Figure 1 (tube, rainbow, N blue to C red):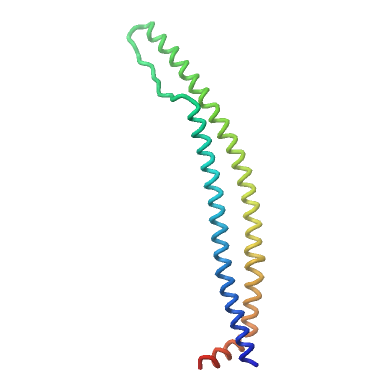
Figure 2: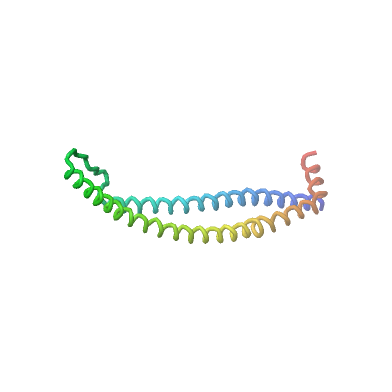
Length: 154
C-alpha cells in the first residue's frame, strides 16, 4: 500500500512541476501581450503624425536678404507670413498630440487596472492555491515518496 501512495505522490509532484512550467509560460505570454499592445498604440500615434505632416507643405523656405532697404522690408513681410504658416501647420499637430495624450492616459489607466487584476489572478488564484496545495501534498506524503523511490530504485 505505501508503494501505491508513493506512486500517487509522484504523480502529484509531476503535476506540480508541469503546472509550474505552464504558469511561467502564461506569465511570460501575458507580459508579451502587454508590450504588443503598447507597441501597436505607439505605431498608431506615429502613423497619425505622419499623415498630418503629409497634409501640409514643407517649411524649408527661407527669405534671402538683399541690400536694398525696400527689399528687406518685403523680406520681413515674407518672413512674418512664413512664421504664420508655420504656426498654422503646427496647430493641427498640437491637437493630434493632445488627443493622443488623453487617449494614452486612459489606456494607461485601463492597463494598470488590468495589470492589478492579472497579478491577483495569477499570483493568488492560479499560482498561490495550487502551489500551497502541492507543497502541502508533498510534505504530507514525504514518507510515501521516499519509500516509493527506495522500492523503485534500490
